[in-house]
Amino acid sequence: MRVHVVSDVHGASEALARAGEGADALVCLGDLLLFLDYADHARGIFPDLFGVDNADRMVELRTARRFDEARALDQELWAGLDRRAVIEAAVRKQYGELFAAFPTPTYATYGNVDVPTLWEQYARPGTTVLDGATALIGDRVFGFVGGGLRTPMRTPYEVEESAFAAKVAALGEVDVLCSHIPPAVPELCYDTVARRFERGSEALLEAIRVTQPKYALFGHVHQPLLPRTRIGRTECVNVGHFNRTRTPWVLEW
Image (cartoon, rainbow, N blue to C red; front, top):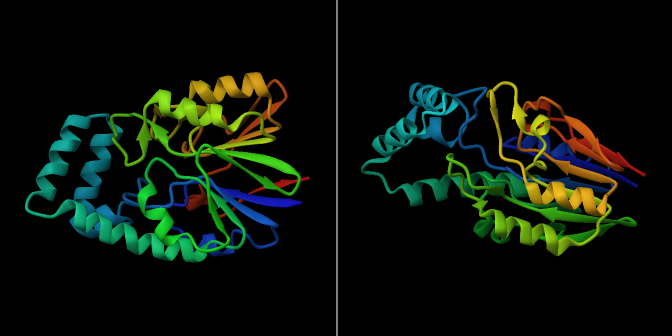
């Protein structure tokens, strides 16, 4: 059995269409949308609307964790526009391209920048969307937990710790634990380029310690200090920033 795993696609629909080549299934751990590319400020919904100069400024403020100033700039730029309608139109365009690129079968969960309410409108037969649920792929049970935890970034799909923990608990014992965010291990959560800790999940960490799945797979941290580590018998792996690498992580058994 061969499964390809991707995360943090961020608009790379052409590469996504090739990600399942040679695999029995594709697993996607979310963040399909590209709102603002921190590596190339000319890419994404934000610069398309407001230009590269404003994108440069927004990245500078967020990277410096000057979130109040970033929100003030955001409010200034959106003044006079129907924010909800404009963003939804751009999101729908990206989702149309991205879901059309998924091979069959694909098993997918949400990232923190995704909009779950729209997924059911774009997921075609052959794409299974899971969040707090399991799927049998080959002879292994895969558990999926989507979204992220609350942060000052206020991305679209962030939930309270209790809600996230409930989704983790609903899985029970699995062979492969799949999530968008990592377990709360500092080395797995630190982004060496952004120079900050992303939020990891204590509930995921506890589930790994107690149930010891063979693998815990995740993304979210684009340039992690440590891309993989072992917790007991569990191999914890950041499957990579697909938008940059264009290469899926391969799981074979």
